[in-house]
Length: 219
Image (cartoon, rainbow, N blue to C red; front, side, top):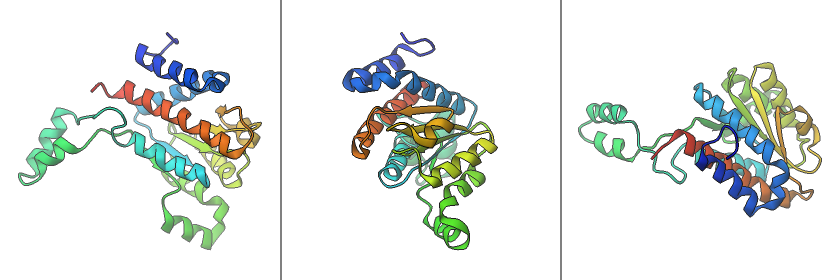
């Protein structure tokens, strides 16, 4: 069993590299990224995520896996369910039964009003950095996704994250680019073509989400 992981968490990581043998080369980096995310959530932190194009879609995808049940149902704690029921006799019971536990994650790609206003008034390349400035707190994690590792708006956001004491996980490819050098943990998947890099990014972040769910939700 990988040191520091439960048996089930280690199995998720092992199965990832069994299904995608190329990812064996970055298995240690994936583990390091998981540990940073786990520690962030254990201290009530949050995850900020950003990327462009296909990586923008990946950012939204990751939020969907973390903020609701992925493979587990994640029922709310009994005490919270009771409080919800007390708040409304009409719909409290249905809410308490239906809502699921979440791990706080924000995709910086999904705020069109803010992004377009900042792009129009200031500088579009700095919109992610502005959101990291506004949302981020020391102890959070910024997951920066860039297939080349050289996206200017991502690099600006990394600078802001580091200035605020936010850990940076880079998910990239090719030679890692600027992001590969600046990230606290850089997962540089061993592919050079954009679509092939993206094809390996998805199983990596799915594994991270599965491991986090396994750690924080027992049902």
